[in-house]
Amino acid sequence: MNDISKRDWKLFREKLPKWQEAYMERLCKEYIELLNGDAPASEKFWALEKRIKEDRRKPGVIVSISRSELTYIILGLLRDGAITEKDLEDFSEEFQEQILYIYNL
Image 1 (spheres, helix red, strand yellow):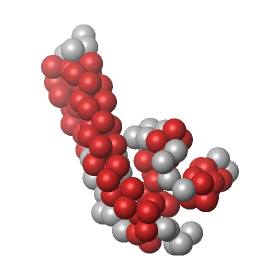
Image 2 (cartoon, one colour; image 1 turned 90 degrees about the horizontal axis):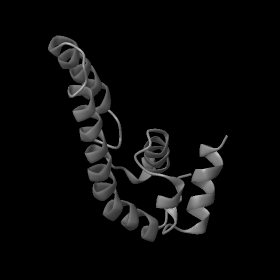
Image 3 (cartoon, one colour; image 1 turned 180 degrees about the horizontal axis):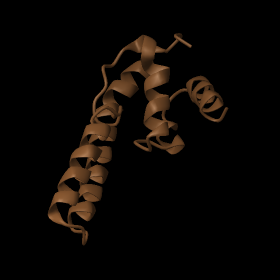
């Protein structure tokens, strides 16, 4: 699992900030929907605070990048919906197969 090619590692480092930005944009839209809801202000406030607290720990928001942890980071991004299988198309076939095999277990 730790045999990550230089090309895949470089590609990941290029793509991660874009993936995170898109994911956080989606989260912001969800927060806006929550705030525009009909619930009392206090309920919306505490619901938003809870969501942000949960979301800030997800790899789509923040992650310490490590080549040895790349497989787990990608799996976390997939699990949280920050990326899709289509986002892996530029990676090597071997890397894609490895990730998708584990992801689909």
